[in-house]
Image (cartoon, rainbow, N blue to C red; front, side, top):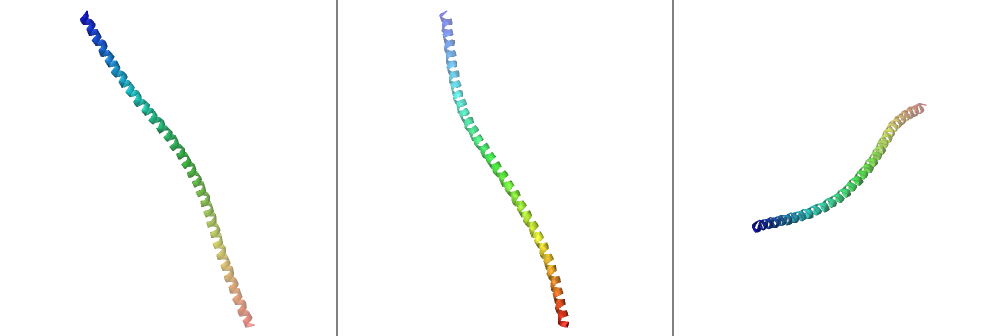
Length: 113
């Protein structure tokens, strides 16, 4: 009976040792889990900041694109005005040439008189 009692005590001691080791491993794992949770929280906050910055950049890009579109319209309008002015210049040059020709003819006619 003493031998069995001693064996049982040894088994209980071994089990207590194993429980202690398991508890220590669990505690270490909990520390790692806590550290990882903090890291995840930090990364999540950083992700939110990056997401906010991304949205701000997208908004700025939208504004820039709208301004570019407006400037392109202004450029197109100016090109149209320049084209119209060039046509008017050509028409005016034709009128001036015609007037000059008529003036020369009139001068010749006056000289003949």
